[in-house]
Length: 208
Image 1 (tube, helix red, strand yellow):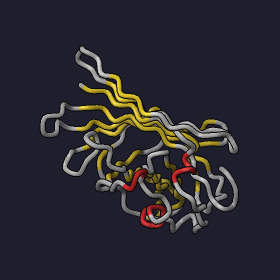
Image 2 (tube, rainbow, N blue to C red):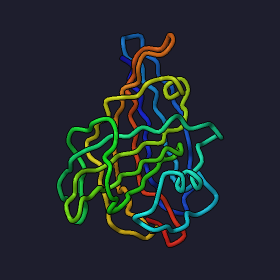
Image 3 (cartoon, rainbow, N blue to C red):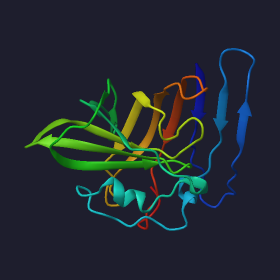
């Protein structure tokens, strides 16, 4: 199985930002593609306008975050989880994730992105005062041949998605997230593991 790493690491404001793409191919059974990172906010020239925390939707976020190099997005995918645990002032979403989404009322949204323009939105779903689960929606940019239309992505898993209720941008933020997806065999490409990191995005109310 191929193992593909897509990393994102924030750097301090004001520093020169570098992007390097490294392709390391071994002679064994595993290949690795390592992508170094830029500050996620460098992906766009515009800041992000605040929106209502309970009404934010993926189209609003997509209108403000473009995929790097003008590539297209593949179809959005969604998964659900029942919950996680508190870590300090943040909530860490963990556990088993199932395909699909939960219907209900959205209590809050949490948004994250990365240098490639990928977007993750976590929706906290409630029924009355009870939390019934969390929807995790991914909008990934094409990364040929790993992520392309027609290549199935499944089996979402994570070491934890850290949710923060700080709403400087008008919605909650994803402080950090490391995720994996299985990419199915596609044409003559083997199955692969897509590894992605996410961090908060910027807004015109300040840097998260």
